[in-house]
Image (cartoon, helix red, strand yellow):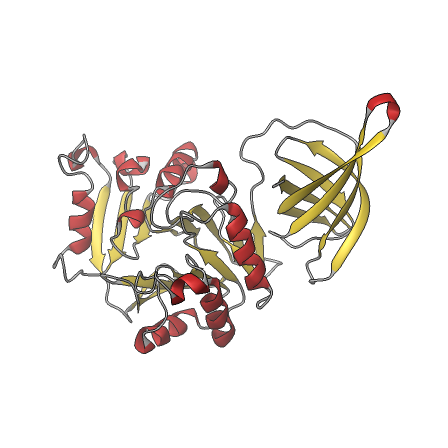
Length: 389
């Protein structure tokens, strides 16, 4: 009997506003959007930030595999979570149907979600009105604590602590439990309990980590966001298996996010930083398989350079190994290793390069692990890195 599998893909991971500067390229600059395909094939989308446009383009390329009915779970109505709506190409295809879910805002009243959707296309903010969208749409208002069923997936919504309100979602499937709880600030006892109820025993717990603990304790208290430290605390208390740091601050460069991830891993073993293109597969032989794309566009060349690589293994132990670097680009490399380094960890790569008159020269590079493909039979792994120095 085929085991149940589910797939979660990250299309936007940045909070507050999109970024396009090179310093945020590695994790990505699009605002929140994820898609989740349940074991029964039902397609869900979490939030409609600018990452929604990228998802729409991919779905149009794979039109034959796109589910004609899709369920969209919106956490709240701030710009960074809805600004991708007008740019989602499947909305303009009449054979598609979309079911939207979110809460009734006290500022908007009845049909809040429908009002927000229509406002995105209203004059003078957008050149094309809502009539251009030919896909069918339904809107359902959900209350905090409410549970409902879509196919074989049970969905539970809970209130989170964020200005003007926000909801977190728990999806229970035969392949595992996904919890999406972004835009949440700790400190309200009732809503802190709500978050813990939502995240209890999750296989994947996606949590807001926009601020540092120092920022949250200072001038940014009350802005409605959390930290890696709070995410680790909750994950430990509720027995979550994997924590994903999400909603990166627009001023947090890739180096800053690297540092936050490093601190989090010092206190919780299985934590990752959300990255555009990251795919988490639940079910099957592995409890969860996580894949992060390498460089998005780079000219690669076969090469043979002797190198010494040092880093951290999956079990947390340090290693140093002699190898040959091959398949090199200006941005990264594919390195064969007998050690399996931890995903999203840092490697030091000392490469021997031919110099003038045959004299060998050494070049030290820092690499960020974006892919690990173990070969169990040969006892080795192909490790993809992006160079950060």
